[in-house]
Length: 480
Image (cartoon, rainbow, N blue to C red; front, side, top):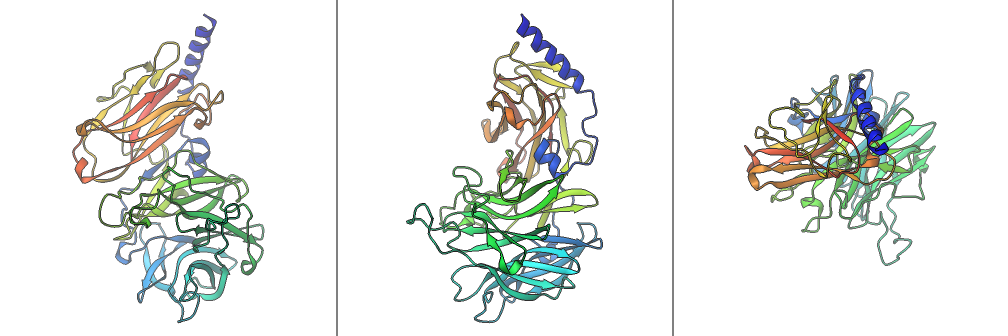
């Protein structure tokens, strides 16, 4: 009887907690990654940024209110770097090429592209992927400018390491087939250059640092972001951008699953992900990765897309900008949002039409289940909505829990279900106890998905299976 009273008391306490303001400030990347108090909202208005000149794989600096976006640009049949400028993050004006491949015999005679940029004290620093005839594989070069348009090349600053794996000499080293897609960060007089290393099978992220860009040292713990077999980042942890908020560092980086059946990444599934660090060397991946829908790899064309991500703050709001399509490369963006700032495109409360429940009961502003009264089952199903257009979407739920410390057991299974395809489960994600950052408050959990042409006008469900291991209340399910 004491146990039941304790449980009921907890339920009552949680019901009162819901009455307090939940989303009182503009959300940040830190709110999303550290606290589950924000979600990504796809921008459905501005869907083809820089389309007239194929702006993609951007890295940016903002100088005197002007966003300078450096991007991959085809220049006379070779990949170089272009510049576009904007004051609002939506309308970009092309300023033309700013970095081209070099002369025959130079280390970047084939390519000087995939830029990473930093601005400080009147100087622009650009690191870039450098490929030249006779250089076997890509390395990383440096160029500088005083106006952001005319760059002077300074030469190679990082070269790939041809040595085999230190543990198994029969395996290639993690960066033995080339390095590239660099990004650059500086703090307290120390430069940090992040880059991908390729061993012939997977791409992983490494880092080099130092007080002099021409004398960087690779860290001994490389790769600092590793691929994980059998996951959406089994094949690639690649292009990235790093920012600092509230004393911590946040990285957004591209990911892909295993290398495609044709032996390339052409038909892998691509997306992007978050990671967090307290020291720029040791990184913890966000447990809700990937953060964007994986691309469709079932067609005959390239499946690259939702990759090459970069953080950009526009008007005090945090965004993730990313490439959407390798065949017609342009840029899109997603806003770091919550229900007050940004909101959902469409949402359902727990008593809305079309929403059903196999277990639980109405509880305050939501629907809850607890271990005393309920057995495992679907806490919520529905709404059988058939109005989604073809393309990318993100479903987001709000939940609260009463215990987030006793273990890390599975608590919920989130599902995207195609009702009109024999209830096929298209995507699913598990939420564990310790993924909740606090108790007694709503936190967001998201599941990205893609609507194919074959799914148009199909009814979709956004279901929640409860495992019966904690009190959980659901507040809302929304789409963006």
